[in-house]
Structure formats: C-alpha cells, structure tokens
Figure: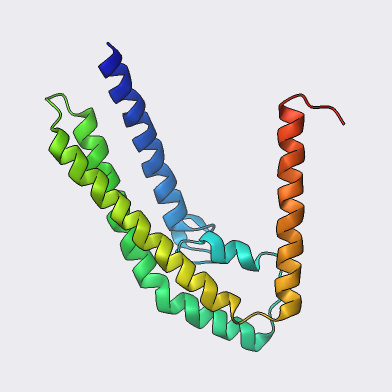
Length: 161
C-alpha cells in the first residue's frame, strides 16, 4: 500500500511538472508566444520587468533573445518529452522498470542543467547591456520583493507586528 501511494505521489508531481514545463515553455504570452515569444521567459524576463530600455538596448536584448530562442524551445520540448516518458512509465498498468526510471530521471536532470546554463548565459548577456542605474533599479526591486515575501510568510504563519 505504501509503495502504491509513493508511486501515485510521484506520478502526480510529474504530471504537474509536465504542465508547468509546458506553461513555462510557452512563455508569458501563452501558446501563441507573446512578449517573450516562447524563449522560456525565466530569469532574464524578470530582470527586465519594470525597466525602460533605450532603443539601442532594446535591439541588443532582442538580438540576444533571438539568438537563443531556438535552443530554449528545443530544450523545453526535450524536457517535456522526457517528463512525459517518465510519467507514462510510472502510470502504466504493468511493472515498473527501475533502470528505465533512472535513465529518464538522469535525462531530465541533464536537460534541466542545460536549460539553467542557457538561462544564465542569456541573463548575463542581457545584464551586460544594462546601465548601472538600471542595475540599481533591479537590485532595489529585488530587495523590496524579498521584503514583501517575508511579510507574506509572517502573515501566513500568524506572526504579529
């Protein structure tokens, strides 16, 4: 009984992960693209939120995004496929092969590592386009968001002021 519950818990997590992967891969504009057009959004999209770019900066940022868009899409598609294969193996009516699950998990980990590396490379390249004033605005916004999250945690945990 415990094994069945464990397998079901993992399966639910995987199915949720597949849905999140799909949503993230589509970007903030949904299935048809949008502001970030399916390059994964991610850290570099958050970096620019609320920052006004000069026209030359906009061109440079767009060129960086365009240069990486296909690679993001390919990695997200591979990740979706790998997560789906793992979910299918766990939810199949027959026996579960641990070696297959381990191989699927290793592939997912590798793809996540590749995505993170691409996200960091893209974010650093975009960050290098920004002025010191823009970086200061980003740092201040980040600090404020951290404070707000801490306040929310305190409220949710019943802490008083």
